[in-house]
Image (cartoon, rainbow, N blue to C red; front, side, top):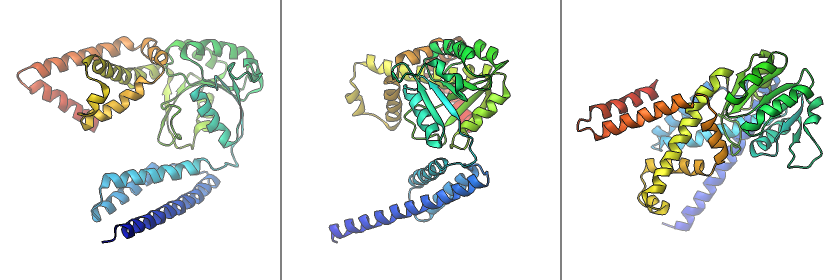
Length: 351
């Protein structure tokens, strides 16, 4: 058997695969153009899942790992959707948009997203020294507030005196507790809502990412914000403003707390990171990957997310009780309660 010949065959096959991916993507772009022309949503999740099912059936028929094939399939679908969402939309009403704090990572991400569509976007951030100030929002159609949580309230109050009456205003803060009163007050006379992208600036696109739009009392603002981010591949969830931080106490507060507690225990264990990696299990490695990501985040932002949420006490009570219950069950000579906790978790994820 000639190893070099076999490697050449592999290279030739890889080239054929890449050419087919290129052809598939080009066809997807044509489908995207048709969807835009006929006002059809870019994403069709049932169709996507049928494609995944077809790939997995093929894998089983030809003795290929279905999990590997599913990863390939979902990557191809994502590539197609991202190409489609990047296509120009002739019917799109282009806006004059200002991003306050746009020099930050998330502000830059939104800037790129909106400018790629064709909107005129200005970044207002003192760190840029570009001559623009908050007063330059007076002619903006849309004003996006992308500043630290502690600064949002002050910015919103200033915008209330500057922006034109029909401007759409929204923040992207991770918590709404500190700004609820201001948002509700302004929503009585202005088009204002509150948005929360449930992803960070490292996201390649909005494909299959969650985006929350909070209704502060102005339905027109919610509708306009949804149009601004619609057909970008995201899963958009409309939510009442008062419900947001209760969800975030679990989605952000709990998940951050678990990870910080995890790496705090490891740091105090006396074992080095490299030493732990040499004996790590699959589950441990998955946890470690998330832990490392959390440990590198902005500690002040994470502190604010824990500290400023009005639902923090309820969350910490549930978390503490769960730890106590788990400890008691694991130390008990009878495994019944431990099994019950595992079964309850299994049932929860099946719902």
